[in-house]
Amino acid sequence: MKQLTPKQLTPKQVQKLVDDFNKKVKVGDEVFYYPVLSKNHPPTSPKRLKVKYKAWVLGGHTAVVKLEDVGTVAISHCFPVKNNVLFDAEKPKQQLLFKIA
Image (cartoon, rainbow, N blue to C red; front, side, top):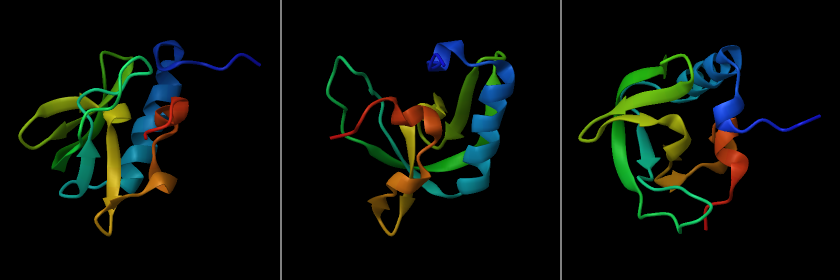
């Protein structure tokens, strides 16, 4: 079976990512937001921000969430905070495409 990349996810799959994210991350919760996450570049320093609005599907293809101070970002750049640390077990599935150092 061919593995899908985020750009190849069906609208239904993207909606499931949003639903799963919203079950784990509530409005007012904090996330670590990485402005740059790429296989070709090292991750930027994370910003610890609060979720302003729950996640939704933008344009039928991208799972996004609105954060205080930065606006709308892809959920693939957001990692839940638990006890002041990045909580790996709650990463949305598409974030597992590469490992954060």
